[in-house]
Length: 272
Image (cartoon, rainbow, N blue to C red; front, side):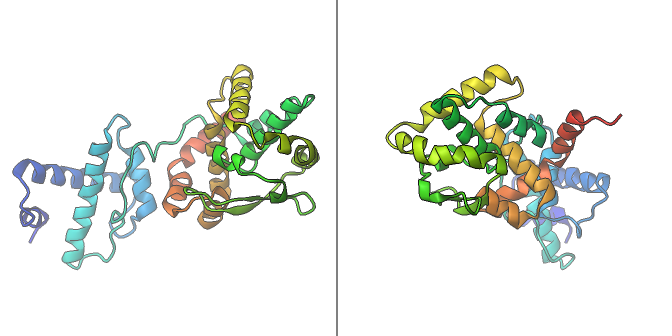
């Protein structure tokens, strides 16, 4: 039984059947261009395949392509030609696989922190918050749960509490953060308890947008940081540091954005 006959057993209408044959052909051509085979293609390769599809495709169309790959692998498994299906658990939700092409290099993230003023208490508070984003990748909701006992200056670590969307973790602090964090714990953090964190992050965002044209928002900084981690560390380590509950979230950074990351780094450090 060939693939077309297999699809017919699923009682698809003619137009749907033709679509799945087309999705298969697109996928096979991509495998050939990437010097991959059906046997060597795995889940992370499919993330790259998804990004290689035209960016103006709808979520529904992209998922159609992925289903086409999934069904073709199911057919091959049924025929005994292959023993794995890399598309079995892949589904695109919203813009989940979209990462910014204009990543900030590590030196640029460091510059944001180093150049931020720290003369007044509000400036010191905002600089501490910025540091926890560009060096540890904390999210806004994680900043709201921060308590003095979570910061261990002697060990140089910060404990991030788990939330509904993120795992808890203990992360290393950078040396440049320690001195300011001492004052933050004793003088600033107690004053923040009954205030809205969004007012602080809003001030920080406003300041950064005025000074740095490449800055988009605080989530952009976290995305850049996790991208740099993913370029140097193994998946499980990055998953832990980022607080991702699902490894799939980490694999996106590890596989999909490597070319974007290289482009950003080359732009910041062009070859002479």
